[in-house]
Amino acid sequence: TNEKILFQRKETLTNMCEERARVLQDQFNVSMNHVHALSILKTFGEYTERTNFERPLTSGVAYALKVTHSEREKFEKEHGWSIKKMDFEDQTLVQGFDPAPVQDEYAPVIFAQETVSHIVSVDMMSGKEDRENILRARALGKGVLTSPFQLLKSNHLGVILTFAVYNTNLPHDATEEERIQATIGYLGASYDMPSLVEKLLQQLASKQTISVNVYDTTNASSVIKMYGSEVGDMSEEHISSLDFGDPFRKHEMHCRFTQKP
Ligand code: WA2
Image 1: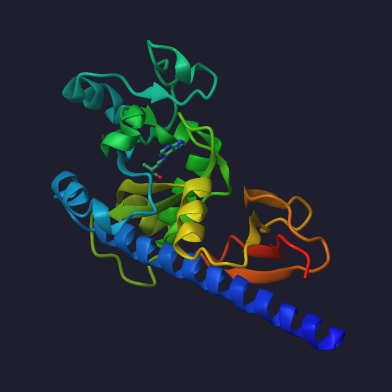
Image 2: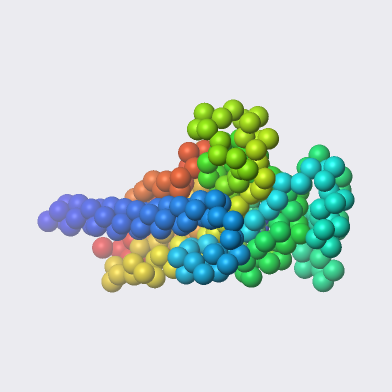
């Protein structure tokens, strides 16, 4: 009967959506664990390149140092470049970024994989999303995510995952102030949302196609679309929750069939 067909259709949509949501969530979590592992490794450069294939979802990994204003001059002399200000307007100019204005502290990138080499020497605390992530990562001692924003030198929306690197083995119950004091740097990975989800959808391609949208629903009154394919059949929708490991951020996958029954 018609009713039975519609019921089965709804069930198929639920299963397909859940499968996609779980695979995306799992792949993201595996990748997150890898970035975490990197934050306790000293041989960053060699190790990141050697294990790059294990993080197919990241567009690049970078390491920024915590530098206070009193250390700035010495730091710049040692590295032979000045700490730059992140400027989303000027990023296409050949001469690059301007020197960072005076701040209490900076987070210049000193190492980056080839794919994100344009952020070397840039003060990550001079970008709103990166700064918030850095402050939250070091206060919490956990991996934290930004809300989606347009990454430097990218036309897509992406998110940044940040772990603070501490100079001592902090106890689990360390206070926020102890964590800030012990911070020596920040390990970050960037995720290009459209290419990440498209890779996954290709892996799971099936006869029956569904349209998939991924949202950041952290702020219920201003939901951000992180990924969107074409609109499907308007009759029904399945929503799968996504857990990307940062309880501060909420994500959802919305699926629809692209064809009528
Ligand atoms: N990495 C790549 N592209 C970006 C970006 C970023 N941040 N911000 C804007 N476009 C070194 O959290 C520390 C990486 C920031 C880490």
